[in-house]
Image (cartoon, rainbow, N blue to C red; front, top):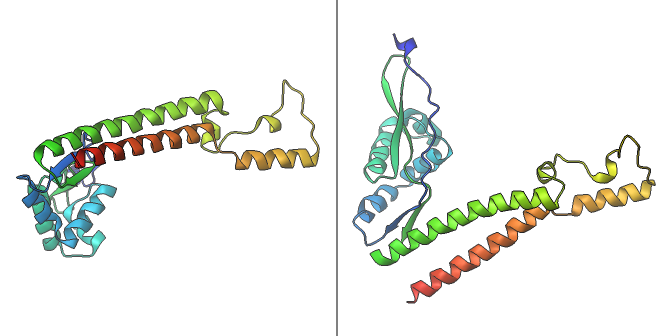
Length: 214
C-alpha cells in the first residue's frame, strides 16, 4: 500500500505578486521576529528558499534533530513565514508535510502603518518595473545586438559566418582583432538592463529617503 503513496514532491514555492512588508510596530511583528530570532529557524528558512522540503530532509540539511526542526517549523508556520504546499509519505506510510516559503520576498520595516503600506506599494511597483525592464532588455538585444543567442554566449559573429554560400577571407591579424573586440564588447541588452536598473534603484532610494524624512 505504501508503494502507491507519493514519496517525493514536485511542489514549488508560491510566487507572490506583492512582497510582504511587516512593520516592527505591527501586530504581526511579535510572532515574526520571535520565529526568526533563532539561528536554526533562519537556517531552515534559507534552506526552504532553495527548495521545498519535509522536516526530516531539512533536519538533515542543517544538521539538527527532527524534533528541533519541527519545533521551529511550527513557529515559522504560525508566523505565516512558511506554509505547507504538499504531502508525501515515507516508506512506512507515514504522512510528511512539505514546507515552502509563504512570501517572496519578505521585508521587515521600521515605521508606522501608513508608511508600511506605502513601502509595500512602492516595492510592488519596483518589482514590476524590473520585470518589464528585463523584457525590454531582451527586445533591445534582439533588435540592436546579434540576437538572444549572443546574449547567452551561443551566437557567432558576422565575420565568422559564411555569406550566401561564399566564404569571407580575412587576414590572421584582422580575425584576431575582430575576435578580441567581440569578446570585450558588452551586449546592448545587458547595457540597457544595467542602465535601467541603476535608474530604478536611484529612483527608489530617492523616494525612500524623501518619505522617511516626511
